[in-house]
Image 1 (tube, rainbow, N blue to C red):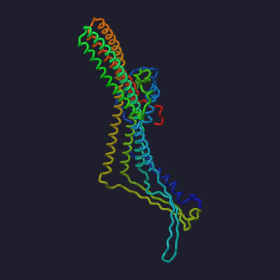
Image 2: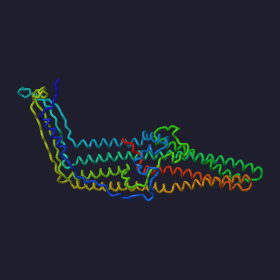
Image 3: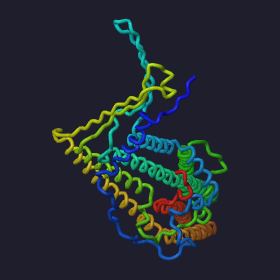
Image 4: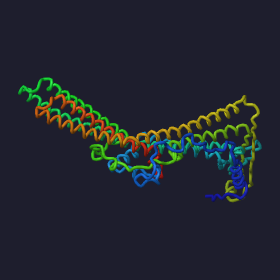
Length: 476
């Protein structure tokens, strides 16, 4: 058995040389990156001013979704989806692939050192037998990064990885919003189903009254037929909403990625106070720069920026180095015991581009065009984010007035129906007044359910487009 120890000559001398080579390329030829001015207004027209439920100093991006979502049933479903949604898993796998690609490219900044042990035994024509053993380590064709090409390539992949990471964050936030809206859609359709069932029940009672009055000769067959229209219209809605509820469940299961406990499903639409916390919106549009999708677009732009450095470096000479150092002896044991002689080789090579038919110029022009493309994409991402917030704020500014009006309409139409039915039973009014009042009441209740759903979805949308969701998700 031999104890191998690294000698102070030969191989050992390669290590400081390799370290110096790693540091040889200390800069890149890419343009210095700086953020462009925001291509949007500084504030939103409909942004509310002042304090909102004590949260005026907290931005949506600083409010974790677990603090924003108050309903524990919905919170648990979101947690299940973040762990089991297959589309999100694909996105997270893309992040891991991008990280691995970056590590592969980053490894090119360092020389690859290999060690080997070989032996050779030959017999000459004179009959002399000679034996040699060599132990050596070295690097092969290592490109010294004089003009930062490899550093630029590493930066390209690093920014691509960071972009994929932000894309994954955006996907998580989007999934939180989708799950919340799907859960609310299910709740709203259950509300509509219950309303249709109540309307059908009331219409059936009205049919019984008109049939009795027909038998007594008080009402006509027109009144009976009119009563039947409301009943069968409600029965049709019952069938339709029953289907929608099942389809809502299927959509929710697909988003979650597994079966859902019935106890986590909504019965009816919750109130805004029990569903979510409110968030401030009277803030500067500069907060959009922290949205994950905007950050992803910015990292893609930085990657394109670094790629210009790669294209520029192609115009300059390439210096490569092959070097080995080690020990040789006719006795294998001498190599490990220090009795061998040192051997080494050093083979630098330089390549200077002279004529390439314009390929380098074309590559540089392509890289610069790509950089302009991704600059436009980054600015468009900011504009899209601004527009999403503006749309959500525009809805927020009017939704409460609409809700109040529709609640009043429901109360008024309900009173009208009750009074019309009482007058009809008393023989004061005809059934057509009852029919019209019942139809108005039914439509008013349907509209109120949709507006309540829109109000809750708007609160979730505003939170999402302001960048909220992952403040406590340090692993993302």
